Structure formats: C-alpha cells, structure tokens
Length: 319
Image (cartoon, rainbow, N blue to C red; front, side, top):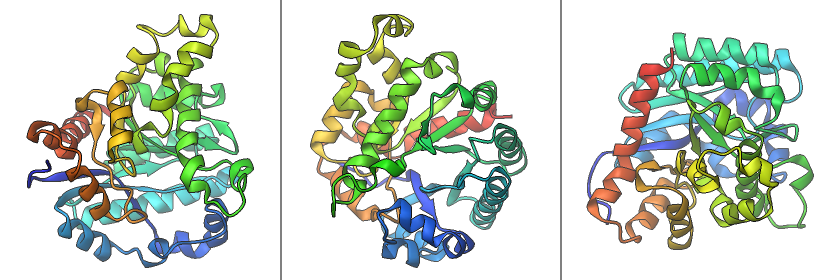
C-alpha cells in the first residue's frame, strides 16, 4: 500500500535551457541518437505540476547523462558551475520543494574539488552526483581517489547515476541502450568500486545507487563465485554485507521482480523513492509502488522517511 503522505523524490532531473541548446548533439549521441519529448518539454513549472499531481513534497534534482564531461577540463568545470548555479536558483525560488545534487567534472580532480567546495559550502547542495563512468573509466579507478578522499572527509551523500559507455550504445541494432546497458553500467561501477576497495576505504561516503543498483542484485552472487579470493577477503563481512550498507532508489524498478531482488541485498531502511522524472513519469512509479503490497510502515520508509534522515545527516556533516 502507499498511504497518503509526503514523498521525497531523490531521483529527478533538470534540463537547464542552455545545456539543451548548447549540448543537444552530445545529449542525443549519448541516448541512441534521439532526444525524447521529456528533454524538450521540461521546465520548473512542469516539474512542480507533476510533483503536485502525485504528492511529491520535495525533489532532489540532478543533471542526467551525459553530464558535464566531454573531455575538456576547463569547459567541464565551467559547465558544472553553470548547471549548479541553475539548480541552486531553482532551490532558492522553491526551497521547500527542491534540493540538489551537484555536478562535478570528476576526471579533472582539481576542478572537481573546487566545485565540491562551492556546491556544498556556498550553494548548500544536498550532495554530489556522479556518473558511473567517464570516457569509459569507471568509478573505482585510482585516478578518482583524491576526489573520493574529500567526499569521504565530508561524509557526503553521493548519488550515482548510470551512463552508457560509447562502445555499448549500439550493441544491438534498433534496441535502445536504455533497456539493458543503463542498468548494467550501474552494476559495472559498483562491482569496480567493491573489488578495487573504494567502498571499503571511503566508508564515510553515503552512496545512493540509482535504479535499484541496476543489474547488481541479480549478479551479486556471481561476485562471490568469480572474484579473486584475495579481493573478497578485503571486504569486511563479505560482499553482501558491503552491499547492504548502501542506499538504492527505485526509479524504473518499482515492480515485483526488481524489488524482490533489491530487498535480498538491501534493507527497507536503505531503499529510497526515486522517479527518474521527467524521463519516467512520476505517476508511473507511484502506480507501480502501490501494487507491491507493502505495509504502511515500509511504504512510508521508502517514500520519505529514509530520504529525510539521510539528507538531514548529510547536510549536517558535509562541511
């Protein structure tokens, strides 16, 4: 059941007008060559209308794939600043309705560190948003460690969103990569962070993995079967104990098979409501959630209580 209660959506995207106008070709390339109407029709007013229609009290907005990194560190730092200022303006105009996860140019550590400080200290961002890979260098790579060290020091909330690697965008002709490659890239990133020790070394970061962790719940057992034993031995408590520490949103996965798999690796207290709006209508997630037969307590935990506690703790510790 889904009782009438306030809902916090931790997975809702913005489309800054300048971002769409200036990076339209790159956006299209990252999404199979097409831009859906949701990209073209988004506006703050439409976002608020959708939130009001479906009982969303607050949405934490972020930039979707392809993000701000296109190979040039200076340009990426500039674009991240513009996008974060845009999001902060939205939050300033509607402080009760919106929060933000800030974009950073992760492959450029100095630029990323500057933007983390600006976003968390000056803009009051709720956390930082990362993509699963940048130029096919996945989270977990040692080159990202200086940034993860700072996020760990701040005990920051970090929202991890998938993106499709360029080599996987057309593996199956005429089949959108969003179907299978998006969830698989979240799993790639988490597996890389798990086995390279990122999740163990930076234990203070509060990760949220989008879309129920993608295909991660289905392949978690394979990690224990096939990973080198010396890597498994470095995980306190083992693979499943490590995965249970993290948070997962239900964007695109509020259905019985996906939720059964997710609940096998994550407690209810670590599952958050996420709609993936505007690319997935908020109402679709709400409708799917209502069919799961959750208890009132579990439904309320997912819909707002878990996110409220996480975001409150994150803001208190991020400076």
